Length: 275
Image: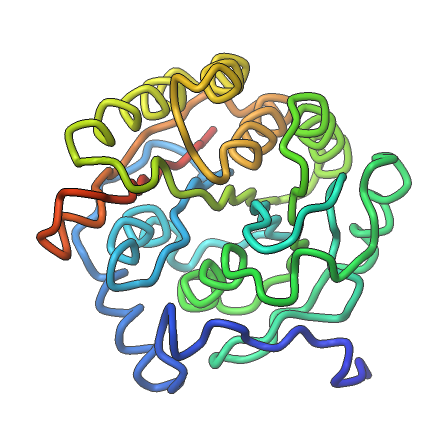
């Protein structure tokens, strides 16, 4: 049995999404029921936003709604670190992540495989404690998939070298598994909507072209912004290594579409990669 201390508690329940399980189920179910397009293949990757559900939940649901009743051996969620800076990729060392819908178990065996082949990966709670970017993805995954095993990864320094190394390592350890990779990212922050849409359009084009090298170059040069751009690059690189060649951007919006204030917005998108 996993000791309770090994389970990462919910940090943003009641803030980013409801803390009451019944209310959370109703909210997520309603969003997942929104009309979704058909994808001609098996979904292997998702890029999803990580703001409060009132702002980005419907965008996230465009991707997660396509996963209903799917099965994966493992779900890997890669996120940025908003609160702590560290060098490397932090792999949660405990037994699971808790949400109001229950505990999602961490795959300790896969964690050990990653630690063996990626020198800059560390088994650590750094970046996990108060971070929201992984946690907000989990209720969607719990509702869409039911039970699943998780590998939660937080990227500290989003350098090109680290992100591409992570993508390569994930491609190696996931080969032969029924795996879903999730990149957790928002887009530009606090620009007028017209400026934000132009910046976000560059990220959208790079994702639509399935070009992680161009995305990293645009982020590094300041031509575009995404707080989880590095995780998106790593996930896209891993998907390419796994033979996934198709991607579709499903939805894009910004916080002003909800609040009505377009003077300083945050951008959100959802996309799925499939084979």
